[in-house]
Length: 167
Image (cartoon, rainbow, N blue to C red; front, top):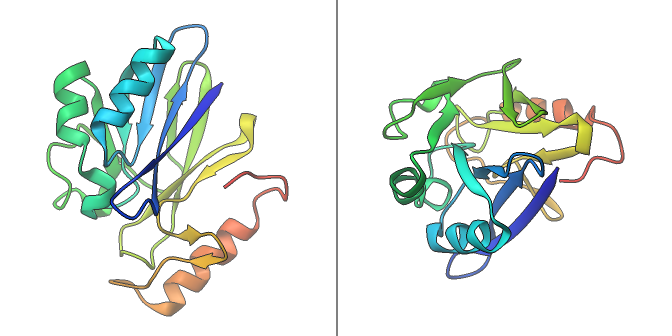
């Protein structure tokens, strides 16, 4: 599997990710804010974005959804607990669900704290976690809607992933 990290936002504190299957060219966009950057990378790589996944409802994680869906007809997946806050979701995800891109399987974790419905995606085959705003460099996301206890329990859950996990 191929993973591209895209720095976005006015302050470049956010990341969008594209994960692609090298055999099919199908790509999955995670938390796209800057849709044009996602489009440019996908075009340069010869990938087609078939799915968009959101970890939570904040604008800096869903801001590019509509344009990517319009361009590619991509399917939008997001947290079941935030389905009323993320427009036009095709499928919802919760703890234990799987996400597929080509042959790559991702597992969904409920990680409330930053928001009450926040989720993260872990792909064991590439030992990669896409944590949204649950984890930041040198810390965790701010607790906006959830509780500190929820955030702590979420961090304990993520701490159980293999030590070589890329975040």
